[in-house]
View: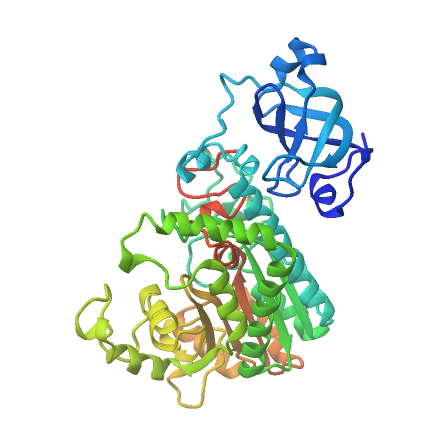
Length: 478
């Protein structure tokens, strides 16, 4: 089985007049003579030329779209247009049949909605082959970036008793019989009898545990699944998604922003280098999609230009206060074109505001800092003005916020005071507070939503199309 050569390697080798064995799935079979074979290593098919006059007709009938084949033959320079080489088949073995009457992926254009319904087969299309090869590259690039800089990859728990964001939208974990859970004398569910002896949930973030690692190992990063039980049926939300969360001891807010900008540029450049064909294909797909939109809704930049735009520009840095002034005086705000009008300081920025700053005002990625403490989490370091925290968000074209982070509050008294104000029980986070009691130091970190990054690099419009098996309200298929 291991004698095969992958199609990508064959097409890139530049070799001809050699004997090869290739294996893959039939995309099309024309005139009983030309098979377009694809093995997922590239979007480019390999043309197999069949000597149909000397091939068993029963075998030819089984060469249908979706069938898995093993083909041995001679790799030769192609006489036809559209490909540089062909394989002149000397033997064809059917490894798996595919009934052409029932196979859902016939060689025609399918809508993304339809492909979501057959997510188990959508990997076999050019679009999703390209997306998931790019996703793979971005994943590898993230690990490479941090490993080259001496970070320790820390596995934080998937099952936890804390809700890092304080949002309360968690999936509960239990092994109780839900129809008959044990109760306390007051009639409440008695979690002391549950598997972990307390109420637990799927993690919404590895950040708090990540900070514990950073307080001993200096620089750590997590890269794992996180879960939000948020009933959002939108193109931007998933119930299960992946997060990259580095935490760095002895970092301040500027160090944090510098690292995040460096990371984003590194992984985008890495994907452009390694997946040039896939990104060019996705760029072309996006151009075709944009033609269906009214002129004013089309992007000013194509996908490749948008990626270069992020690489070629230093990210604009400004405070939340400065951003509010810009937005308040902006034409869309004055003409009441924003869905959420900016009245004044303290407003939580929406995606439309973030995109205006990036796409219309600065025309480059933006790092916003120093947000009002009321709209940010308890663990963010309070600034001396008593009103703002040392937080930062990175805003990208077409996406809005792609990174959120902050310098963490290292002063025990300030952190406890903020927890009291918000109503976060200190006794449940005793372990977190211990890192401030024993050798606390300035430290910072951020979270990068991996699917948002993949969305940006692939140019896709729906986050459900950049994760292999999307989880969202009323859907946990496959």
